[in-house]
Image 1 (tube, rainbow, N blue to C red):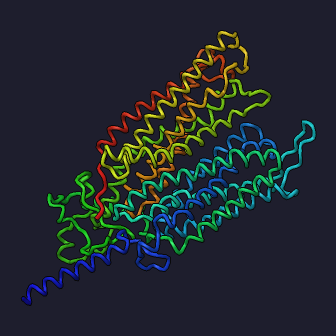
Image 2 (cartoon, rainbow, N blue to C red; image 1 turned 45 degrees about the vertical axis):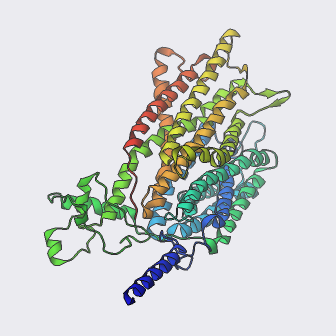
Image 3 (tube, rainbow, N blue to C red; image 1 turned 60 degrees about the horizontal axis):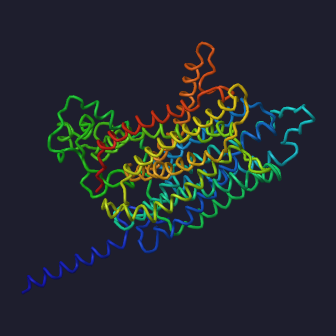
Length: 584
């Protein structure tokens, strides 16, 4: 009888311990003071409004500067079109490169919270400096007198560009961290919270576009009609609100501890595997080195299960005879854990999927370039009003704002019934759907251009650089399709690079996903340069001449549609071959 009672007592004790453990997060997250966190008091949706509010206000501030920056450079700093365009693209490219700095600092040393906090202050200083440069008379260039426009002084240039590049540096600490920090509020080990995490990424992108919508409409109007000091001051105010929103939620946040430099860990794997290149990798993966504790040797990271790909890297985790005899396993440049090796394997496995995002980003870049140029050669009037061609990008934002709740509340529940997936589609399936829609987007743009060119030919306008009487609203489908593609591909990328990245590399992987936008812009410029060179041989006007009526912009759109199709086929192969990470 005593034995039965003892067994019952042990079972009851085990159940109580299991119930107690379920009250806490299982992904290693802690509270602000470094203590283990209770699920019911922290994270989840209760913490997310502060993060989403931060992102909405920060994006409003960013687009409040970026959307109309070229106009300020040409009309107030009196730069030429080429110089202004170069300065804008250089600044925007920098904004997508600096996240690599913020990501390494977040993953290695500061953690995501303190990286966002520190770089937000740098961002705010930049916004205030920019506002002062547009408000204080001594910092503003003199107004034009007739056709004479005095150049800005070196001091005026210095103050303006100091503020501008402080913003670029500030955004480098926010962009790669804020989406990951928001996703950190949901416990990876809890199936219910994992479903909510998928929904978070949808509403995160929704918040970005709400900020962009306000900037591209209201803020731009204020800058043009009420002055640049006020037009820059309002975004600066919203950046202050973003910082306040972020700090207010501090007691509710869940924090992941930084795990040390991910770049150092990857280098250690490469060096250790090279040094042991002559050792055989055992068939039994349990013989590879791993810490005996339940937790990983990498701070803030769960252990990763062994995978069979890239076995040459497994040599870094092979225990040599000398190490076995001495029992000295402390040199990470000679011996790495399985988890550390798997971190590098995951990044390598991600690469083909990551690379396909570059073509999509090149398609997305057309919205602010060739879509606008196409619109300038169409009828932009409604009665007595004239619509700026660039303002049609608002329909892209409206499309995103429409599709996010439709996807989250309608498409996902329906898809869940058919696929059995908790998020309706896997991240890879979602991204693939977006790539397919991007083909339709480019095809729609090409069809509109074919109709426009046909009308120009019928009205004998081919040799005249004038707009064709075809309403600019025929561009709405291509903008709407591009917005839908964003919701599937860009949001899918956010999910994929967070869920599949190693726990201690999430900021770095987010920064790499942002890098596709920068590389996509460069690729778009490269394709444009090559096409222009090839199609203007022999004195021909080429596909994209100054007078689009005598060109063939439709061919360029078909080229991008074809590249997008090839890109999608490559993506399908990469997605089928991709193997999910195994986290304990």
